[in-house]
Image (cartoon, rainbow, N blue to C red):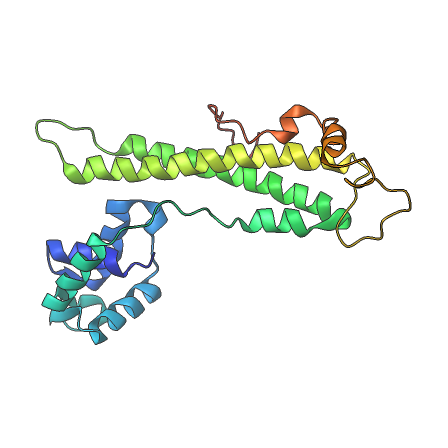
Length: 231
């Protein structure tokens, strides 16, 4: 989703300098919501043109105070009431590369899987530290601290799943590199086995049965050890 509704939600709390909105966005929601200043001010200008926010004080781009308008409040409440429609499955660029690599580039794809795996582990280390550094509750509960930990936990869960998937992908691609596999778009050798040539679907399943069982299973849902890039 865009940053528009997140910024509207922050401005519902109080008018804010433009440059502070970017800081508050990351402080409240975590590093996944980091936004550079150029994108931030482009978004604020567009929201101002749409009548969702208005400048109430300040001079110069960095000293402008923005406040929510009635239209902006209505936009936020309308968005909040919408049904999200359930979880969305990601389109992984790395999976696209693996799928379309072909036999000549599969080793290159394997190297990219390894780099992705290390990046996931590195980011897991960073986010785990950031979550641990969120102040614990003392005499009064800070809602922003509780919800920041919730957001960081969501990011950590996502990265743990990606790390597990990338390790599973590395195993499968490594195994595939060892096989005399048939690739789409390549001429089929005479006598090559097909489901029909093997006597139908049952016979084809019998041949697939030769693949190690772990290669046919989804990525395991189990605790993942975080490793450093230098490991």
